[in-house]
Amino acid sequence: MWSVILALCGLLVGGIINVLADDLPERAGVSRPRCPHCHKQYPITAWLGLSRWLLHQGKCPACGKTTHWRYPVVELSTAILWAIVPLVLTNPGNILFTALFIAILLLIIVIDLEHRLILHVVTLPTTLLALLSTFVNPDPNNSPLVALLGAAAGFLIFYLLYLLGTFLFGPGALGFGDVMLSMTMGAMLGLLRIPFALIIGILLGGIISILLLLLRRSSARTYLPYGQYLAIGGIIMLLWGNQILDWYIGPIGQ
Image (cartoon, rainbow, N blue to C red; front, side, top):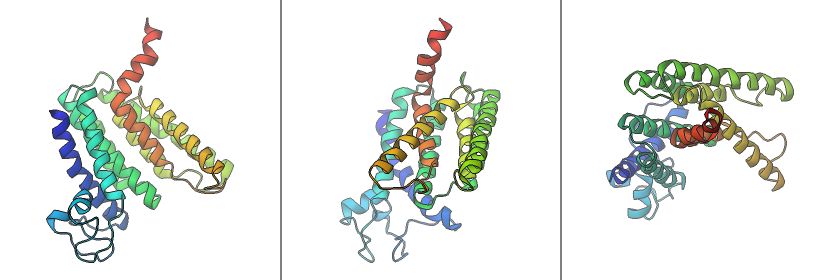
């Protein structure tokens, strides 16, 4: 039952993510959903990308231009991930904050993919929120101190990688936004889980980069947004981080 409710809420939140992904990179105020082609605001029946596909043949009611596939995909992805949250977590506070943090990471993925940006206006408030959430939602794997140490570790690890990449490959090898995202994820996940999230993200980025090179879809000098892979690692650890910790640390403690 909770999965169904959260899935429906996730559809709506996915619509909000789409609006923010359009407006934040432009440094514009957040507005009602509007067509990126004619810039006219959608009627309420077309606010969601999914509803435009179902009710308006996937087109803008005003200009008739086709809605980009990103809009329904983000909404459905948010709905699916939010539906999973109560299946793997039981504490109401953990469910609430995990769903919220997943939505923020999805926003970061979309903006990084489309604009190659990880905005401080997203990462800095989220880091603060993640730290404050540990005071109202006690979690043995992410107490206030553990979250603070996780943020510091995430920042330090990727800052060192940022310096190394700059030294080896020149400016732009890694963006400083990736460093800030790593810090934000450290605050979300805590000291024990952030290393796993970063490892997953780095491995994903490496595998995809190699595949693109083999398929000749990119070259050694092609810039590939890295934040998306880190954020995916963060989502995986938000949902299954405790199980991964138990699997990895359990045998050591036995």
